[in-house]
Length: 153
Image 1: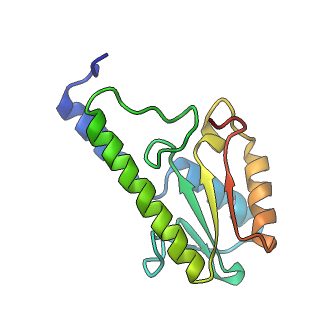
Image 2: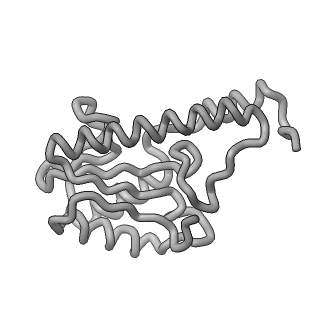
């Protein structure tokens, strides 16, 4: 099946997708702030510019979009047009994510990845569940963790 919009429109739509201050990120930020957690945003001196940095807990949070980071869930579907381009782009994103996670770990940072499907899919968790799990992780000694929707592939 071909795309229903022109290549120019599709390009404009994809270019408009934000990398910072997304709705899922803002939801997590508001919830954690209301619980008293304070953080820094998008620190340039850390690999991958994590969405939220909690120096007090030596922890960072990444809020990942399932499409852009190739998450194996119901929200990810490789486009049927320009498949090679998209496969290469997403594979490169995944490799960069892996390198950044390794660098952060070597620097002593704990990393929590919150996937978009945990907040937006049919298998989503409630906002309170995600915020609760995140706050428990921040207060724990657990190194790295992921929060996903209930049914990942």
